[in-house]
Amino acid sequence: MASFNGFEELECWKKARVLRNDIKELIKSFPKNEKFELISQMRRASRSITHNIAEGFGRFHYQENIQFCRIARGSLYELLDQLITAFDEEYILENKYQKFRKQVFECLAILNGYINYLKQAKNSD
Image 1 (cartoon, rainbow, N blue to C red):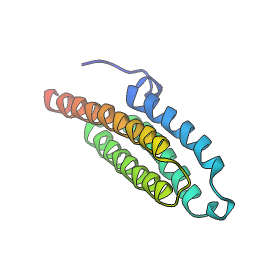
Image 2: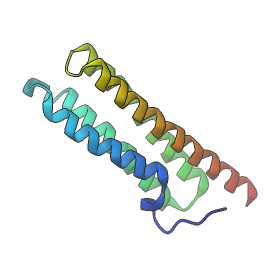
Image 3: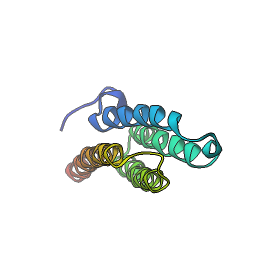
C-alpha cells in the first residue's frame, strides 16, 4: 500500500480543495440576502469536505479515517443539494450548475476510491 506524508498529498483532498475554492468564488455573486443562509451553508459544506479528509488522516486508525471520509462524502452530497437550490433560485445558470455537479461527482469518485483503499489496507493489517 502507498504511504502518504500528509493529507495534502491525497488526491481526494486536492480535488476537494479546488472545489472549495471554486465555491468561494461562486457564492460571491449570490444576493446579499443569502449571506446568512445559502452562502453560509455552501461555505461550511465545502470547507467540511477538506476538513474531514484532513482530520481523518490525522487519526492514524483506518476505521476512524474511513468514518471521517464518509462525513466528507456526506458534505459533498449536501453541497450538491445546495447547488440545486442555487439553480432553482436562479442564482446560477444550468451550465454553471452542470459544471459544479460534474466537479462534485469527480470528488466523490476519488473519495470513494480512497475509502476503498483504506478498507483494503485495514483488512490487510
